[in-house]
Image (tube, rainbow, N blue to C red; front, top):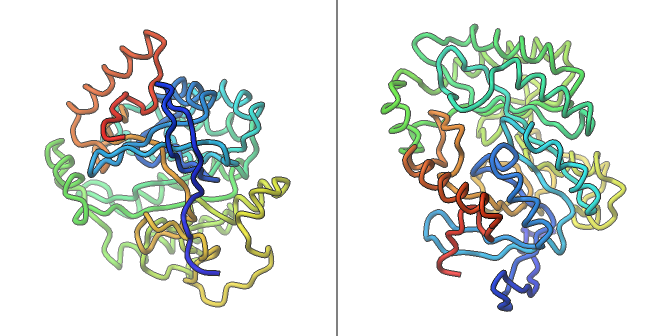
Length: 349
């Protein structure tokens, strides 16, 4: 098998009644760019009923129509899916499968995640969601892992352990991600403007210390561990190459879906010869970093719309931009209008 060849195209009728070309992904990511379950669940359900959305490229502002005609699974990324949980039965009744990538960090004392509920509430939501849809369909993400003058490796491990103790029977996977600051100027500027200039990346020694501690904790938890976008080989700690959009998870959780299994196209017992080799290599997402192990999906989120306003976020240009987009969205939604893109900014389509 070669590289992923891209999604099929279908013809749709847009909201203005014009025939349009659209890509028709099998897996939809909702979303790496913003928290759709927390803030835009009503928009998502309306667009799902319409059968398509418009995705706006954040770099050139060009739009792409995305049809749900061939979609089998939605991967929902969220720090607070509670507002969305009442909609899950509707999604299931429409014939779609889904799972959640639930980011659950503890940076309360630092104030790095000002727009999210208290940790105790987020843990409660995680447990309730797991009971609702099953532990295999709620992936715990601790993302990003970061250090500062007042937050060392041991303290961070202690925080991870306290959360893991609560979640260990309610999930099967933990994905970690070490913060990248130097590669993302937006992240660096946002941290500095917010007074968090002491937040820093992990050294190789820090990574070894953290992963050793995590491996010790996981001896009790028994979770599948992976590291998102990490070029280092951490397999000696029982940590595999990260796959947030995971072929293994999809195969394990949705094996009843013959169309999805045909798309995945990899035998269940295929051996992985090398620790760092990528499962489902033929489906590796070409739009992600080289160290990313995710299989192909189509993201439908929009930059500068996430109102969590996390200080390390790469997808928000500024708090002002987020506030402007929030006003646009709220004005439209209060009028019962749910445009093809989240805030109706589909110029260039």
